[in-house]
Length: 391
Image 1 (cartoon, rainbow, N blue to C red):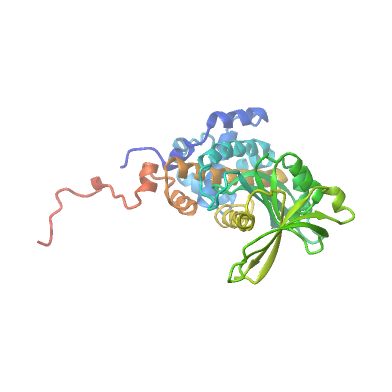
Image 2 (image 1 turned 30 degrees about the vertical axis):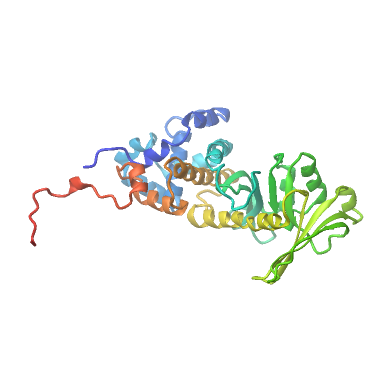
């Protein structure tokens, strides 16, 4: 029998447990709790995310089948779907939100040197939102329309490493642009946004703190050209068409944003579309402006990835607290896998790491050996006195 620690416990070793305990104390998570602590809840829910469990009954069946290994996984309390459902319902979701943010603070420096493909030292964020549809009769607190409910994941993604730097969970009614009132801009950073976030008063507030933005202009945006910078027209027709300094002339927009803006017009020959970008940065090249907006697609891929490989489209509980708890623990698992990838200096994708971990959590193999040497085979399992049948 192999001697060692479970893969699951080795994964948990990368969690800052002192920070977790501090988050629990902050919101009195273990107050009057006798047997099933917040850590037990977190580990059970993390196990469900890593192995993509379907329901609370599924979690209970899988963990009870490995009852002798629960202690070595760090789970001290008895696993029951009723106990877990009640914990998700009543334990403050902010415990796991704060813990996820602490993991994000660990992960982002690990990916700070990632190459974006452009000559730019600034931090680059992509801001977008994704909607998760829900059943109105089961989730009435998340009313979206008259016939259905929904929640929105408003996410600010650090494009170096695709680590979410900011997440806000709201009901489906909250318009995307309102998140700019919650977001605290970082001076010197670039914020890449689609035209759904085009609100010039909010963009001007971002400009005043020294942050930069790149955003698509709407067709009815009224402006006046002040100056045109020379651009080299490519022979293929694909590329930057114009680079202008403009001022807004709309009745409300010229008051909301009284300073000059930069307009870059770009033609994409592959799609046959023309894009008009607005930015408050006049130092970078016009092609860089277009490239920055092209990288905004990474946040779309992030939403697609977590919806496919983590459990955030169907939920184990129906209350607002249970839903937010499950989402924040899913974010914690995503960031934890990203931390492990960097600490072990792995070249494989997060998807591959997640799949390997999901199949080997109950094995007793060194995690670095498991992920760095997938072709490894234990020689002790071979019989040394096995005769060779063929010469």
